[in-house]
Length: 252
Ligand code: PGA
Image (cartoon, rainbow, N blue to C red; front, side):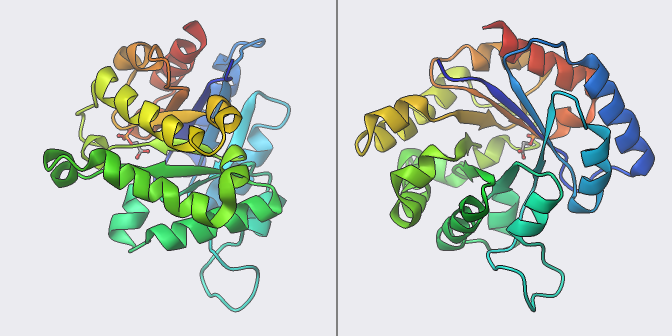
């Protein structure tokens, strides 16, 4: 049985006060004894603040991005070691906004996965097709290429220490969610791809769905056999909504 994971990706949102309120309400709202891993990924400048607010709670901490380099002369960058030093356990890598707005390639994302693993961070590897790619019937080919570039560099062992998030680009922040069947098809394809190399790793790999997940569609998505949780953007900024999504992951 794979333990579910729900990750909040706050993107470039929040201020001291709103984050204080959000995290305090989240910590208070999570019921003890739950089976779901709950992770929040603040903008990096607020990681330190969140780290102290979640101390002793059920909430875990992640970052949204990191450099592919170790410490050194890289002005404006943050290293994997720095994230670890500030209590992060996870790091989102290859998010479609990083790929499309900041030119991150499959090779760069794979490099970052390798560096994250080397310091003991759990990468949350994001993959997903654009609308054009879906409409031209290349969804599975695109996702498989994105996964393969990571397997090629870190092997299936590296994948076993990571989470994968399938996020169709056309569903991110648009209000348009993939149907549970559409998401399940891609999740199963990813699991089969990994399973061709190592069946045990594939069976244990946690694959999250992301893209306009909300309280009212979470339960149906999480009910699919190969969906092991969610990567939540907009809805993670509203505590009631996020708590309902966490509860939906707990339920089925
Ligand atoms: P969304 O974002 O939930 O706002 O669609 C998801 C994501 O970008 O991870």
